[in-house]
Length: 450
Image (cartoon, rainbow, N blue to C red):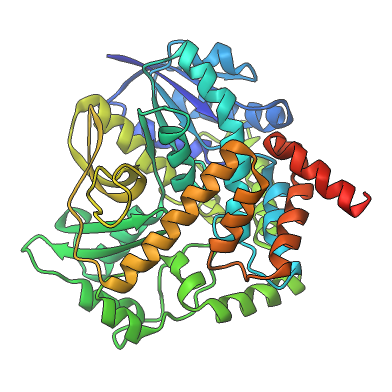
């Protein structure tokens, strides 16, 4: 079976990793065409990164037809798989998401809090015409979304934009799997992780091949009495200690992003200090990307450079490749993805999007049963899911009052007059990418006499 893949956001610095992942799986997939699409502002990066991708394919001795284009419609025609890795507004928009809340003394972060809500607003709006094009040009294509915030975007894609053949993915679970195997001195295939929750807000247990639950041991090895000097942490999150007694009480391992919720004051204090020094993550990533694209331009470079690991987001592309191969071959590979709940998490809406361990088949993701969840985590997950649902509704409708509700329900945004001030400032800052909020933004400007 010959396959045509289209990657939206093809000029991303992650593209070489995506290409490497497929080259490594060349025996499991027959790619004939691979189109990389970007917007006019990303033309230069697109040409650079696709040039490297072509050199990688040539070195591997493959005859894949690798193309770069700014014409999305031309690329999408008859696609079998569409992957997405785009960032609306680029890193400049990310800088605003991070710095504006911090200027108010409120957490600024790419996928959590106010920044995460606005990234969802921009991304979901950008997806509306993409889905319209796909409906006309590749109605049977699978959409593999790793554009953040992946959970909320996947919620919108499936339950609002109607693209049922969507799987959302994140690199965090696969990173957790590798870290747990290393700590236990086992191979990846000798342990099983059971995830339950939402994208960037999930918990998990770890079991070994002999059927032993190793979660309590890993809590101690990662965060407690057995902790060693080195600990694997997502690159954009400060490594502050979790409250160990809390982890012992829930008997589940956390996501690194939980630091923002369970040691909120300490993380906010650290973020504000870094902001005052000028160390906003978006600025750091900009520097890394400049260095990467200088490397990518080297005509002698024919491999993914090791420096890409400093970009963050390790394994994103690897899991995307695994999903595509698993669908094509109906392999029933177990992966943790964002997909429909189908009642697997009984205390969340039946068909909302959740992030759980699943089997990947030719039908898509089949969610697996979840571990026992303590009451406190049920409460947090219910709150966070309702926040996601309200955020998606606001993104789809452009309703200012619903957007304000999303801010009010989010546990990382303080309540009061400052809440609305922050919402208004972010709406104006991102005006060019939020046409659905045009009326609300115009009213804010009138009230401010802008």
